[in-house]
Image: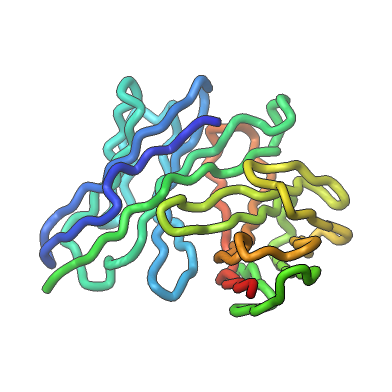
Length: 121
Length: 117
């Protein structure tokens, strides 16, 4: 299986500081998409940001940005100006190759094991 | 507001029981998914459906089956629940994408925490 690796089980950051959450991935695909989701203690999964493999610029969404290094197969999430409400689990994910071997919409997200971020006041 | 709704937030069942987890989405999405979430393992795909009555096995289908009789509803079935199926179960849906580089996100339900005793 093509793996997603998040090597940081837990991270601490001071409020208002920036933090980087690491993500590396396996792939033999030329075209793929990478996602980050946030899961607060309430349990819902919240989509944060997306990066396409052919996108030339790193994705940004407000305080979230993605440090995409294609050759190294890494897609690290950077959160700037951390807030207490950023405390949550963060998951990196990518669209896997088509499950039936054809280039259709039949794709699913493969997730990493997650990083628990705690923002300290 | 888009919605994926799972029928139960918490469920306690006995070993050997047949268990149904229901998921409904109101976004007319073709794709629906069942994931299992365990600490340290992230989310693992159990089954995937890309159309009514169509299904595909994910990474950990053993001990589970699924049913999709209507586009909006995707059910996960534990044929004979066991204690190692105690977990958080997450349902998700998404549009059909044009390719692996598509930005179409998956929308998730609130999760069902299942305990098998």
